Length: 304
Image 1 (cartoon, rainbow, N blue to C red):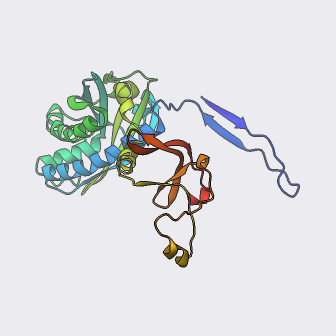
Image 2: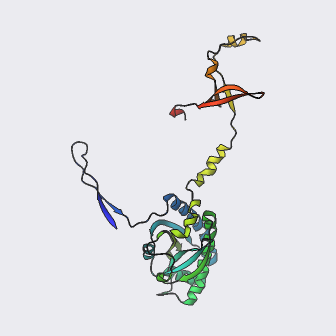
Image 3: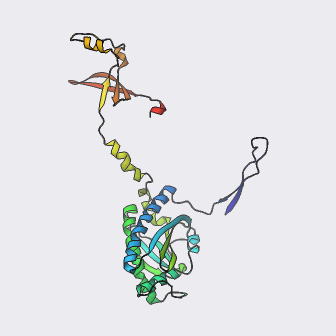
């Protein structure tokens, strides 16, 4: 469902008026996965693509590259409808959640890789409306390789282990999610000597819902913040500061009195290096001199 939202007409500088702006709002696009979580998943799958590229190149004995082309949130039926057809769909189990996700690859790419597995050049795909059982059995090995590379990434990120369950050639037989269920679609692109081919990882929200709290968007920054927090800082307590001439300093001797110009009630200032950080009251704790912090020193914004 789409709604056309009209913004109010506002006068422009100089007396002219702006034309009304029309903004289309599409409420059919789900946003069940937070943007921060989606970005974390994107970064993790970019790392997966680098490892999978090397593994597939070795297995096929030919250079290829796999990369993340983007991600989007859609309803499940819209995600399936957007797959290049025809496609081969790998139903992948996620344990211990007991859920499933789908890895889909366009048939022309699958047949090109099948040709390469049998010793061909892999520069052309075999013309098929649907793969045979033998072709599916052989290419299952490739899907298993991809899933095996993806599983450690999901284990680290979500605490889930992936395993290939079955291959389907028709999307209607998947039975993984309801038509309207929110889904994250990760679009992948494989390049080899035969050209480009599209893959997609379809992740229904309920398949990872229990693990989403692990995807804290601020986790990469946590070690950076923690390292300074563990550093030792030397503090000094300063009662007052007094400027003396060198001659006055040299004139000081045992018993000399120096007037500081502050009252005892003014307390002391705690410094970290040359930076004042807290105000405190002087006192004792047992046999040790101590200070009691009473307030934070406010500093000008430019000094922060």
